[in-house]
Image (cartoon, each protein chain N blue to C red):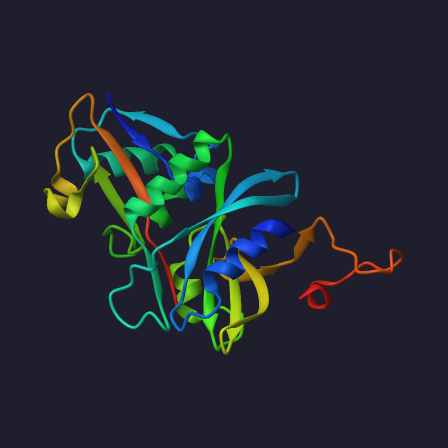
Length: 90
Length: 155
């Protein structure tokens, strides 16, 4: 199973769990599985149009999925998926 | 309530003073009951590609390094600080829009390079900023031991 690492700001929505094993084999399925198990995460990961939220980055084994196959990026059993909040302001 | 060690305030002020650009960093500590305690900070590069006088951005790499650092010390990231050069310490609309849940967003205002005031904000359940009270510790006394100094008096 692949593993998702939850960043500190989102752990309040995963009962403080940091590493979550998932069965999914693509990023989009992983996000769906994650939000099915932790519904409060949904609005922080997916926007109202069903796309990835603006201030979230997803890394697969340290590679940004924007440089891979975006939500279609495939996962292996030993893949580590890091959700990284985009920290910004004005 | 956000409890910030005096030395951490000094670290932040050292980072943000005399810069016309916004400076930023992470706050590291732990939560205890209703309070959040900051015991160290970690300055990071403002990576915003544009006018840094009005914006800041932290790279994913710097985020991950800070999170690993915090975990290695048995602590956690509790928030972010950034400066508002020649502006108040009130959050901008973008500050609120981009804010992450559960993080404390400390804003340090500088005027003509010098540190002015510090305020902190955290998203509520409606994703709106609510100000959180800051207490500095240990309180510094200046002569009159019967008088507890306010933040404004200390600075």
